[in-house]
Length: 362
Ligand SMILES: C[S@@+](CC[C@H](N)C(=O)[O-])C[C@H]1O[C@@H](n2cnc3c(N)ncnc32)[C@H](O)[C@@H]1O
Ligand SMILES: [Zn+2]
Image (cartoon, rainbow, N blue to C red; front, side, top):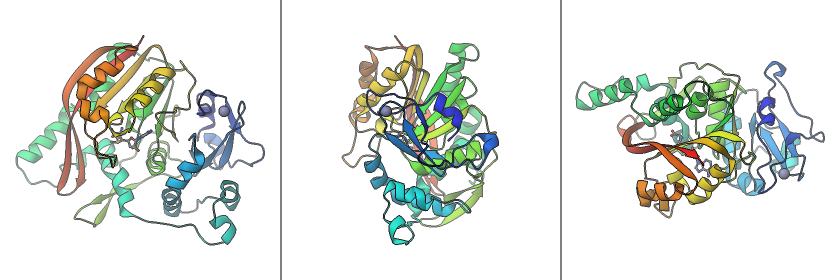
């Protein structure tokens, strides 16, 4: 976590929003003082005293930390196992009450290829789109993919162009990209706002975003594409710039670590459909946005993220979304059926036709 981010991010505990500072009772590690980067620390809320860990450079700003670590510890361990020379210290494990800190045994490392699924197609589509069609035989599908890449008519390009046109220059203030995954939305918003933070509940995705876009705690040079079922092939990731006004943290879109009215722009691309309670998330976007602030949304109105099936938003479509926004927002630009392609494996693609909108907060 960038120390600079502590100027913008606060305690996510409901109704608190106290400022956060590295706890003096836990010696923070600054392996890279030039970058002012916290690699392992405990952040303490100056108002309510709640504490949040920074693990492998990723701040975990989750309200129910115990529940989060219970659900994600295997993923965190498996991320740590992939980073050579970096680990989660025994001191931190003891602080978190992780059993392996007391037994001397390594933690339960699960190297599930499923985890690659969560980041690799996104790394390819967002940061290496030229490779999407490279190996396709000539034909209608290759032409379709080539046109899609060349036209840049996809949700990120459409929404960022709309935001840029509306501001007519640098917009200033803070931008948040909710459900940022590997971080493209936050990275693009960094060129328009003073500071940009991507948040996601996936530890692995936030670590990948930090590694690729900030080079911290160590650069990400490859991603893995599933070629045939269960077979993975490493691909080189093109290098990214490392803007100084960008960071990524683990947090929930329904309990953002931000003060009320503190944020100039909230983006959530292809996220609301995956939320079990999209209205709760929209209410938090509304809370943190300043009056006149910009909301950028893309919705495929499809989600297989919840075991219960479709969420109310996914089932309700654009009409449901317009109604949910109407009391607090004015919709200023809207376009439906903007294509979005993910190459899940060599022979499997996901194609979504997204509904995109720009709204301003009353
Ligand atoms: C379909 S992906 C979209 C990723 C990226 N915005 C894009 O368009 O490529 C949805 C992302 O939202 C994240 N997500 C789901 N529920 C969330 C929540 N409550 N808070 C924050 N992130 C969430 C998931 O971890 C996942 O990375
Ligand atoms: Zn607090």
